[in-house]
Length: 173
Image 1 (cartoon, one colour):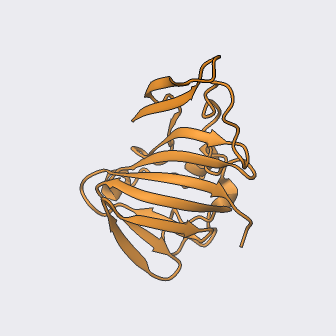
Image 2 (image 1 turned 120 degrees about the horizontal axis):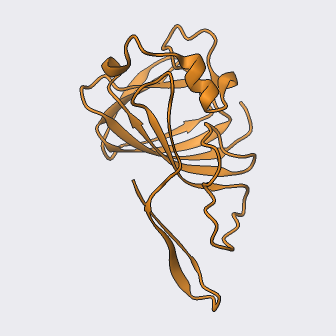
Image 3 (image 1 turned 30 degrees about the vertical axis):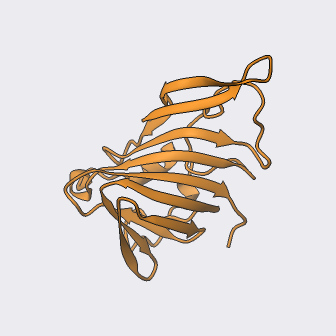
């Protein structure tokens, strides 16, 4: 995933400060083929646009900092590819999010809830968004606003799916 980041030079002129693949990726142990690619992270609002440091240069975790945001892309392999290899305790622990897991998980093994509002845009492929009650198929070009709800993602196709997410810290429901 190519990431181009802008900034300012010493004279205050706009420049490109980064151009290349984001090095901030986490291939989840316990969920083979599922990868989180962080493109940018903010620590609060309003965001700080000063300097040229890579704001995503930090551990890749599930949720953004308090009052912050994460711009991320997630590659979801087909569910069939992960069958028999899932270890969700390991996967959620790797994201620092063991507490987000739904202990019941009867609806879907990866049901979880975050203290965020998430803007999701399917870039390629298709994926099912699952709620406690109901599900909807999202295809390339479709958007979803996930508002702190218990949810899971299911790729029931035979091709990978790529989804862009913007996660914004929110008060818990």
